[in-house]
Image (cartoon, rainbow, N blue to C red):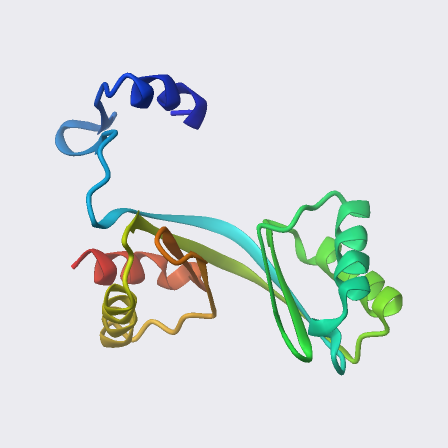
Length: 182
């Protein structure tokens, strides 16, 4: 369902049941207007590429962030997630074939005078959303992934009370989702 089709129903507090077309009597999802504490939903999606660039103090350089966004835009991409450390900028984009990713990496290296630019494809994103998403809840997610031998490749907390986004290899997505659900 398109998110915009849900909004009027939420405003009127009309619950929506989403069922699997191939198994309509099986497990299903309720979309409701009330906000309960805890995890409200977990979703996984494949088809992401991570581009990382390293240069001294690049994470603290606003002009470098703008230049990175400009390079991505000129190649037809918008960042899904942008994170930084003092000497590293990481950007997650939707699927990008390796030939195009290599062109973007060269453009980034030239435009930003980056020391190292790495491209990693075949990534999956897991988004865990809910109200009052506590530190203990985050810790239980990490413990579940560790127990399942799934190594997260990136993570970001979208807001303190809303969600956690975790990146894993596409090959580990199913294991990661099962571990988190369990």
